[in-house]
Length: 249
Image (cartoon, rainbow, N blue to C red; front, side, top):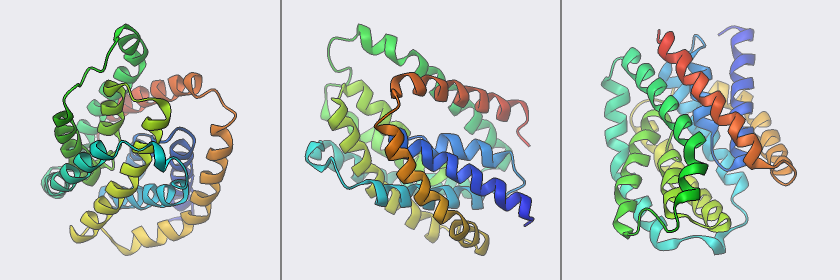
């Protein structure tokens, strides 16, 4: 790998980690599309983002445990574990172009949903997903998308929004799920043969920047009006998804 490529990868990991530390999620939906634009093996990108996300979770999960929705977390964690093998089969056997196109479609759909979310939730007077059983398919999707694309948080973000969790419960449950599912996803990726020497080299070089991004993100979280900044992030997600659809190779 060239020095330029290594620096670009570190920059992407830093940006993704900063998004995660600032808003509680987003490192994969930011980092994966950017890494896909670089001459980097897809499996290396997936494993690197997985390790970076788990590191941020380990550093960030120090408060908010008392706000966790424990019954929902247990259901999400169990079905996340069940969904991991499905994601590994997808990433190991699906053609890279198919994965990239699917990633682009998902990003556009997720970004568009996130932009429309305030209008949806404003008109909703009660939780849209009343039954506790709804945690099961969202957890399975988290496991599948987590082991395949490191998007283990996206289904839980959507689930929490539909459940209309309070901000404290949303953040606490989300971070706890990231920690649990992150461990499972990373172990699944290791057992699936996705770890390589390049992964550990890039992770080791990125680690100081991941730590710096975690502390900087905590600082920004306390000072930036996230509801305004999130809108720009979601617009960027849609644009990145469109880029992958236009140029999937």
